[in-house]
Image (tube, rainbow, N blue to C red):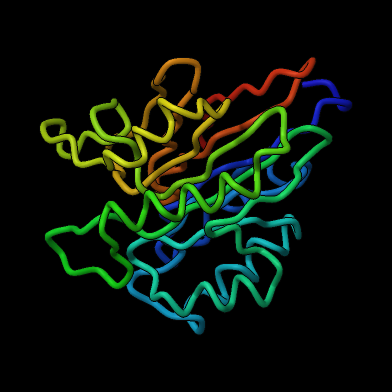
Length: 223
């Protein structure tokens, strides 16, 4: 990858296990790390803080949302550190923005941060409202869109969000970085949107998202 081409490392489903940060060769040189949630295993800020400390020791530039396995109070820590992109957006490069929505739709496991699909939809709209000025857009969303390769639980059931899918179909962000379903590590497309689920970080899964000649691309990486 040319040095003049900015790139970002995306991953999620960390679940307190930080060992793989040092194994991602592209992480130190990335413009930022984009974290799609589940920093902890049902933990709050005290559990999330060491995760962020280990990550920022390798790359200090982090933008993140929480996942359903994080307590909602982790958002406060991310906001305090200037990392939170929940229902909001940031500029990554001239003309390129990133917007984020964390949490997940209800699961059978009564996890800490679950919300109705209608709430996910409202957060997506709030984030997009702040991102409309960007020519290119990356969506970081913990909950994957329904009926895709990236939301297939156990290789059998599609458990993604209809609201996320409807948003992607309408807005067509360039890339959607998602997670939540560990075993659904894959790439897929909805229209022009490339969707990437790197799988859980403990298994070495991450994504490299790059901007080359005005085009946003993504690929899976393996630590």
